[in-house]
Image (cartoon, rainbow, N blue to C red; front, top):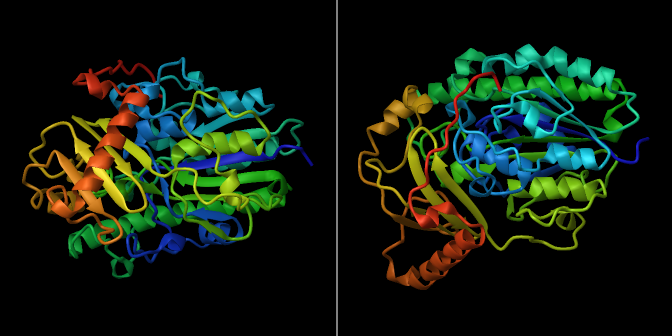
Length: 433
């Protein structure tokens, strides 16, 4: 048995916390995801895990560098020409320094040139639809079989286009009568049908996960592998993706290593964590030296019951998506404060891919009023963030404290937004990334 485990990181698009085992008042669902639910029962499920940004590229950049998007430079989308500067050190690079070979199968969204991300091998580049799990499954099995007897441990990053819209491109819809509508959207038949397509995407990915796990068992790799399933940000629905509300920031994370007490036992970790923390946790787990110039912290002490929290609060941001829409937030277990730095004619942005589908069309008509510049929510009494308490006299002391903490964080992390409007830095797309 290798001293260090292989690491497989499976990343989906736009999934939020939508899995059967994450069913809750905030994320009600009737998803049938037996393979991932079983993985959570055997491994560890994280229930308060947040991304740094409610959009693909910025969030993934934080996962891979343990830096906020405004620190690593990826404040917009790769498909719109943004790219992460090559002087950033990535998870793949850190793992290579610790004796790993590193590999990418499928989608990445951090750089216009995947060769800059620290992988030894990269699957054939092409249009994003080519990275669908349906088209890539054979490549997953081929890779694992070819590397089952490696003398060095491997890090494999699997990226899929699912569960990104248009859902009907990747799978069939489930029966819409099964759907549970989340509290941030109205009960509506059009939205219900939209969610039925979303469910279909998630359930077919679960089937692929089952096949991968079975293959790992069949070829004798599971006993020496840490398997990680996560996503980049919240689901592609109004008031979720592209917003700093919890449905946009709260994401799933399941980890399982049958050879470790840390990542077994069906634990449910409720500690407040950020996807910044994944990189230092993995480096810590394999016995490496955690970098000093990063923002995340290892959560291994939480898994070993030494401490309950590593963060008193988490921070998140959005700067560019299809439009310039700068905002920042601070969130702890009790409260969330959001600062909106740009005027918007609607209460929040609905991205184009959502706006053209049923849920977006329904909600766009309902949010035609100006967004406030500040928002404050009492998460214990109002977990769905419906009542903005910014002018409530009872909360003014809390508001002042959160304002101060947010500004201190922005200064500490050298946020360019403090100097005024952030300049667009798109680059021309010349090849598939």
